[in-house]
Length: 228
Image (cartoon, rainbow, N blue to C red; front, side, top):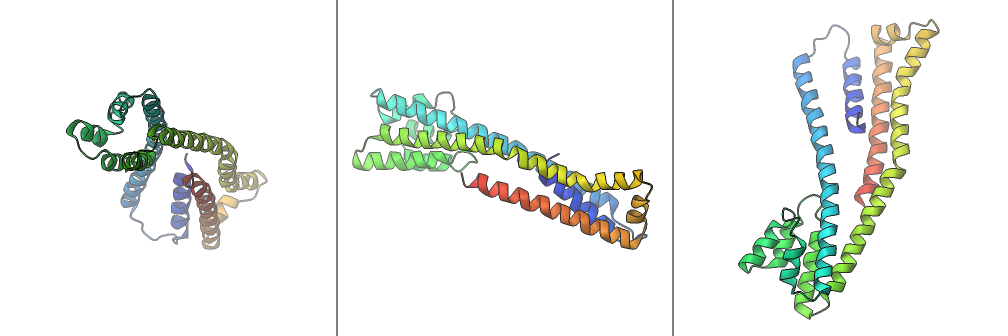
């Protein structure tokens, strides 16, 4: 289970526990909203994976483009050859090449997608190279190298944050372990927490704080990831 979904479930359970016993709740509506939220989280995870694949593909296109330029091919031919296996990444740029349009502007449009931001840097290199006659191959090589290094750091960060993520999940499960431990020692912890008004308030506060801690930890990690 992902951290955002776990936070939402804990927060939702806290709200349910905070409602006094006997008060009717729109169960069907809550279930529909929960399913919609789960679909949203699943879609975001798929988008994140797609963005990672597109970042890697964009770096490959830039590296191939720089190699074609170093081989002495014109920029238009070099880009067309470099994007041969990844045409879905730069549809506007390829269209501009075939129709004689403005390639840098088209690259900016292609760079609007998630994971394609490096294409906007390529557009800037192309425009500077056209305007000043500067070596486009060297500039594109530097952009590709920086993007590759950024992706390496991103992967290393994901590996290094795997342990904190696991710790977050363990900490989120500790309240349930405490309930089981109390029940094993003979205390009616579950009955008090869920069967009395003070217990329900305590459970709601605890779950709410647990969800807030998970959300905050996740936000810190995401802030570092977005800085790359």
